[in-house]
Length: 111
Image 1 (cartoon, rainbow, N blue to C red):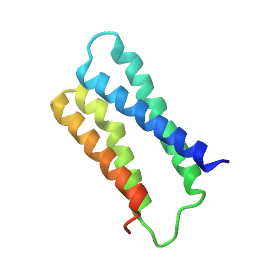
Image 2 (tube, rainbow, N blue to C red):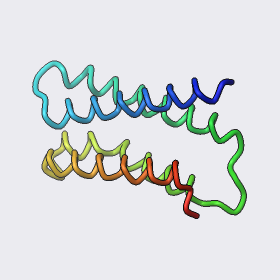
Image 3 (cartoon, helix red, strand yellow):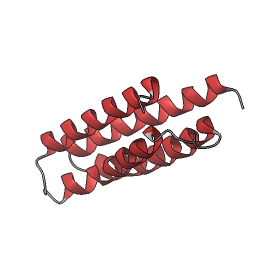
Image 4 (cartoon, helix red, strand yellow):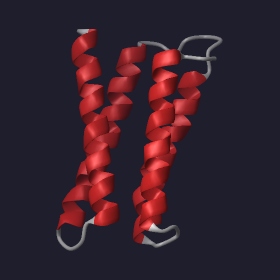
């Protein structure tokens, strides 16, 4: 498949995720259910397209495993906000920090 299309879909999933987490953390009322659906769909899109971009995991490089761990943290963020384990602003900051770290790892592939 065309790598440009895969990268575009991967970014679309990331944009959808951050829209959903922002709505979950800062929104109210009925929009939270549709934001939770968008969150799940975006995470699946990010995961599937991310592995399609890799084709096969590179040997001797472990940055993609760290990205998978960050993906798990991003998946837990709405539960942390809904159950008030952490304040919504902290959850949003954690999600943004994880997104920045994942972008750095994807672009630089430092290890």
